Image (cartoon, rainbow, N blue to C red; front, side, top):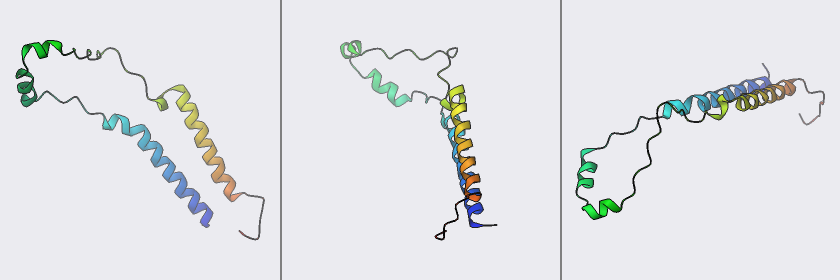
Length: 106
């Protein structure tokens, strides 16, 4: 096996790993919200009434029925971009071994 084909296989493997991590990482890293600790509840209870009344209310939590926006790679535009990128990388890997220019420096 030539050095170019080994390099092409290495690059394709690295690209596959990067794409897999890009697609799998956001759902895997999503953590459930942390419950309010008793210590923070005690600190909130220690705040005097007038100061507590001046505090602004927190924005309401998003409802479970309204899903957030889809990740880019799961949209149609993202799938097209990913397919074009994969095609370009595949053509580049193919053209490395089938180059018509044979310079003496190579």
